[in-house]
Amino acid sequence: MVTVDRLLSVEQVAERLGTTVRFPRRLIEERRITFVKVGRHVRIPESAIDAFVLANTVRPVRVRRITYGRAA
Image (cartoon, rainbow, N blue to C red):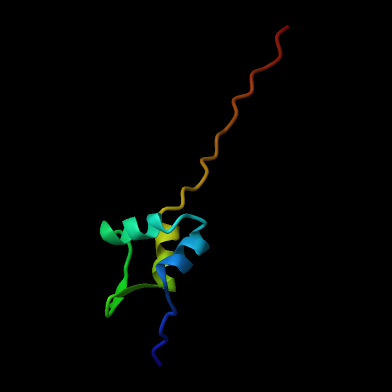
């Protein structure tokens, strides 16, 4: 069985990412996110948003603290 992603408008994507509408439009223009053209409308699959967020997530670096002995 094929599952079809829900297609979101640019406005919905901006709201989901917590950005202005300009940001998803720029992602589309630069071809940095998958999108679907439905006539003159542009829609973005939910899975494309999840993939974009996952690909651009920066994990924290574990820093080991160096402990020095007490001074005598």
